[in-house]
Length: 489
Image (cartoon, rainbow, N blue to C red; front, side, top):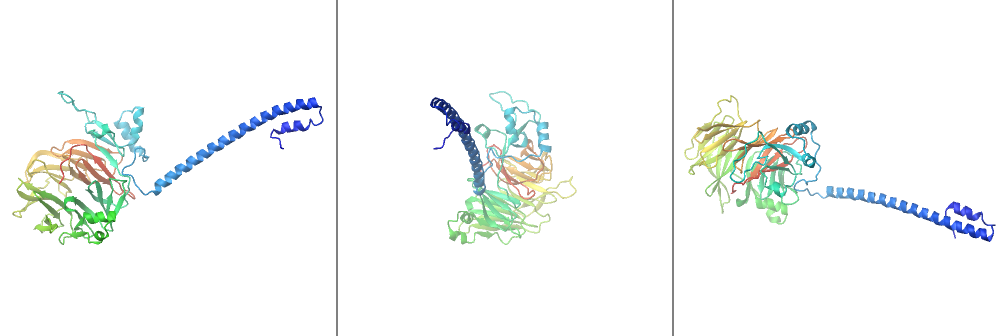
């Protein structure tokens, strides 16, 4: 039987073969003692070796597990609705973000440094100093240009949800075709691009469904009560109505017969549409359409017709319409208001008379009309007309009603009236939010770096907009203004 002791012990035992019995006994006891020490040393070495091996194995398994989880996440194909709180932030442009942080903020305490890393917009206003009044005391004096931060892609806590500071979030999904328009369908978002129509599932995992491909969608609006989606789409810029039930069948794939049916119908034989507006008057929904040199008005006919039918036509207009709206003056007289490259004009539906509402006298060239707002509680008489980098308050009769001019800080790329009673302008350097009644600046979002943003759609206090296709892709943002919204119809 082989001895398990050390070599020194085995050599000592071999050299004592001819010794006396007492010596052999003494040497045997010494050998047993040495053998015990050697075995103990070997046991410690083996234990240490085994521990190191297990440590290496544990690290290896952990690495494989991490890489496995990463590969599973990449191969799952499911996109989250919003980026999680712990998602990695993009590398910021140090030449801008650090300068903004140093110029606009005092040094932050250590517990706020992590939050600052997640901030992508600087905001001014929005009661950003906690300036609410309690009891019967007087309101605090306004501080000069109060500033706060807005978190992007961070789920608000309960106390943040009731804050007066708006929140901006960004969807993770990247679109590789230019986003031109969008419309809310329930909680989900229909998205029109240069190359098709898609649906962003906001109620689930943020999955995107391709509904229609190889067709350009310029403008759209959902009428859920009528089961339709009204669009300007296609190369000929037709006004085409899609049935929501047909689009739903393309998503769920549950009714093959519905999917095979023709799921759309054109409005008249119109082409070259520039802009449309849907206006409700009593129980009638009017579709006002601006064409290249005319305006067409259609009215929704319920069952058994279930389609838009021709109502009025105003051809061969002197000024080519670019944006269009309709107001109900004193809740009786219908008038179309439209903007052209020369100014703003109106058409009386009863008489057919066309007249100028506002022509900028200080502008020698062409203007870019943005939007026409009928002021609330004005019985359809008072208007806010936005063009270039300003807005004017006039009546439907063409008289200036307020001796003030809404002045944007820069030339906006989009202007929109939202359900909180405010008007918003998207510029390359900032997003401005103003009171629609006075033009007073309620707040500003300063971009960390210059970027072009485009308004898409709004409902109540939710506003959706997108970035322009920079390089290879663009993304969708939405903002919560945290103000009570107006009732939808």
